[in-house]
Amino acid sequence: MPAPTKPLPTDAVPSGDGNPPGLSGEDAAKLDALFDHLRERSPRSIGYPCSGDFDYGPLFRFLDFSLNNVGDPFSGSNYQLNTHGIEREVLADFARLAGFREEEIEGDGRAFWGYVTHGGTEGNMYGLYLARELFPEGVVYFSEDTHYSVSKILRLQHTRNIMIRSQPDGEMDYADLEESLRIHRDTPPIFFLNAGTTMTGAVDRVDRVLDMARRLCLPHHYIHVDAALSGMILPFVENPPPWNFAAGIDSLSISGHKMLGSPLPCGVALARKNHVDRVARSVEYIGALDTTISGSRNAITPVLLWYALRSHGVAGLRERVERSLALADHAVSSLRAIGVAAWRHPHSITVVFPRPPHAILEKWILAPYEDICHLITVPGVDRAMIDAFVSDMKHLVPPGP
View 1: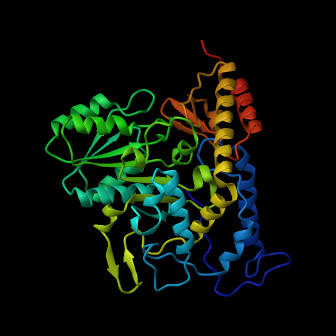
View 2: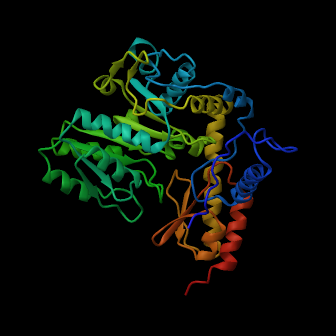
View 3: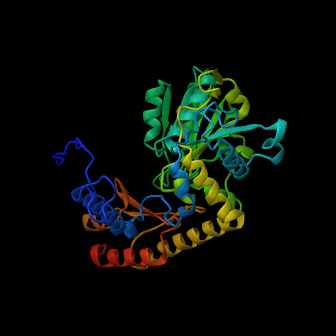
C-alpha cells in the first residue's frame, strides 16, 4: 500500500536554516531525497527515448511569468502573456524538417499548420481527430506494434478501427493490410503509420501504402504518421524511407523531449492547413481560433524547443544524430561480442535484444516487452554507460546453449 500522506499545513511553516521558504525541515528533506534519487538513477536510464544532454539555465527567468499559449498559435489571443511568436518559429522549423517546401511555410501560401503539444499522444490524437472529421465513417488501420496509446485514443473517439499484423521486425504486414482494405473497400481508409515503432524502431512505408490505395482505387484516404523519435532522426540521414509530407502524408506527430531533449514532455503536431481549416471555430472569450485539443497550453515548452533548435542549428542536429547512430552500432557490436543477439533497423537508434533477467532490469532503466527488450542511444547516453551495461550483461546473464 502507498504510504499515507500528511495534510497540508494550516499555516505557513517558517523555514529552517537553508530550507526553501515556507518548507519545514522534513519537507525540504523530501525534496533533497527526491533529487538524490533522480540523480542516482539518471546514469542508468538507457531504455527510454528521453535525451538528457540539455542545459536550459538561461531560460529559468521565464518561470517568473504566468504564461499560457491558449488558442491557435497563428490567430493571436486576448491573453497576451504568451509565446505564440516563438511557437510559430518552432513550427516552421519542424515543418521544414518534415518535408514542407519553403513556399508552403512562409507568407500567404502557407500550407502547413501545427502547434506545440504536451507530447506524442496528443499529436497522434490530433491527427486521428482531423481524419475522423474529414471521414466520419472512416476505418483506422494500424499495426500491432503501434504505441499503446493509439488504441486508447480510438476508444475515446469511438472510431472504427482494424489492427493489422506486424512483421517480425515490427514493420506493418502489408499483405494483411491489403486483405483488410479489399474487404472494406466501401469505407475511406485512415492509415496510422509509424516512423519508428516503439519497441524496434521500424518504419512503415508511406510509398507502399499509397501504391496500395491507388491499386485498389481508394482515392479518399488519410495518412497520419507517428514519428515521435525518428522524426528528428530521418531528416538527417542519407536515403531515408518515405515518411513525411513530401511523401504525401496528411499529419504528423513528433516528440520534443525525445531526440531533441526537454525537461518537460512536449511535442509538435503538424498537419496540412486545409484539413485544419475545416475544424476551426472562433472563440470570443480568448480572442482566438479553437483549433487545438487542449485549451490552456504550455507556453514554456515552445521556448525550450526554440532554444534547442537555435542552439544546435542544422549542422549540430545532424551531428547529434550521427553520434547517436554510431553509439547504437557500438552497442550492437558490443552485445554481439558477448553472445547477445542484438540488432537494430537502419536509421534507428533503438537496439533490440532478448529480454534479460530480472537482475538487469532491476539495475538498469530498460523497456522490456514480452521476450524482447531495447536500449536507445539518445543524446545523453554515452559510451561509458553502454560499456557498463554490456559488462553487467556479460556477468549477470547466463550463457546461451
